Length: 179
Image: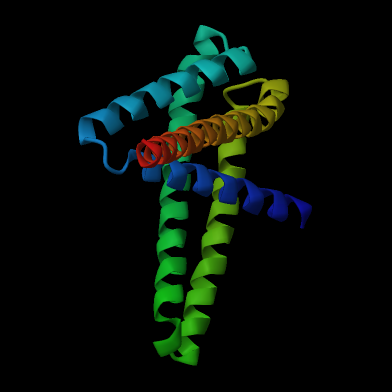
């Protein structure tokens, strides 16, 4: 039960980070977003490689397994978010059977993700020593926390800039009134 709660919390953090990155990316050109995505990917590779202390041989085997897992996990999470959004949007007009079906699909999505995680770690044990397999969980959490901290710092910096602009314009308006 504790593992499921931890997994759900990690999923929510991942979803929040992804939505925040998407929201910050809106309004930017596609090229800028792709450049940011490439930078983020490069940073993630460096972060994981350094913190897992991967040898070149380990990294060569690890990244294809991890990337495949990440893509499948992302697809499951995206599908689940669409399911939740659809259910929330149409809940008032849904029949009891449709609500039950959506709930079943949601639960199946979590079960599929749990099976994916179990399969991933079984495959990972063939690629990395057990200590690094355990360390991966810690590194993933550290990486997510680091990204969230970075996003919060950027948001705070942007809100402070916005407040500074409002103060400046307010002060300029006051000065213009007194002249």
